[in-house]
Length: 355
Image 1 (cartoon, rainbow, N blue to C red):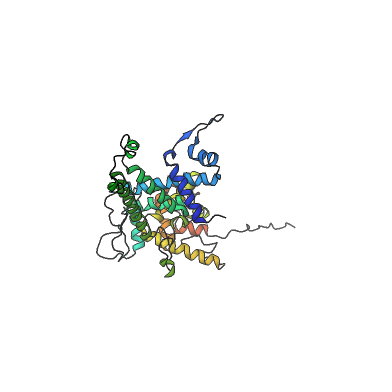
Image 2 (image 1 turned 90 degrees about the vertical axis):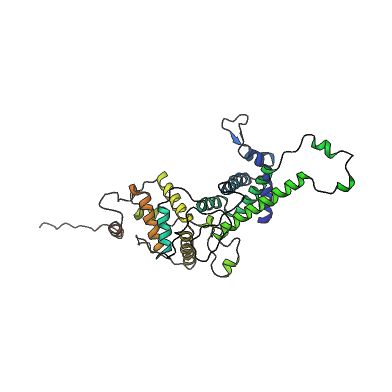
């Protein structure tokens, strides 16, 4: 069997090798639809598994997203992250667009303040972009970062001078200077150091934002605060809960997908919200292992502050689905109470016999 580390290293090598053809497509003989050059090269030419071809294509996309996180900012100076956690200090990495209020007075409810700021946001923050990139790569996020570094280095290298091979084969080279690095070697070393430093700062920032859980900072698990990695987090409400009482008029189909994606963005967008959701879902996991549930099956209302804020966000984000299907009133407390009647058999009505 191949160890996970060796398998991941093999994927990094394949992905880096096929970077020039990442977006290439071609139509094979006898086929009508174009196929990915990367998929064909990995599965047909290299005779690897179809899963490997899919992972190579996934790493190409993940590396591109990680690179865009740096390209969207000044690459020569990474600003400090705007975190709302007190005492967090400055963090090296890409700053978040959805920072906490800068008022000197502490808010009465940091989680509520964070949720309110997200409701008014119209563009995706850098933090949410990083979370989605990590969710795409999943446990292979390290491989995605390595491929992004390789791509950054190759893009920044200068073009070789004409007749470079002939110049290297010249017999007139001074033996004393033969072991000294050339300008090209220095440029390559500078590119490697720069790319490594930039993406190391990016990983450090994502770790400080809690998006990596305890996969990098093992001490978080030791001290009892492991957090949760972005790819392990699930929406606060599942599809049944959304259609039962959060958005009772929501139809099945693409609209449901939009709601679930909106939940994920809401959870990823701010550190306080993310931390609260992670803590709640870790409690739910622990309860499931013990054979119990944090919420009863009959409960049709928010059970905690996280669910309350998420419910309010979804109803403000999708107001057209917040009304009950029968139109009797808003999908709020009254709607929850109306829908809280236990489901059971209808009462049997008996007719009196006429003598």
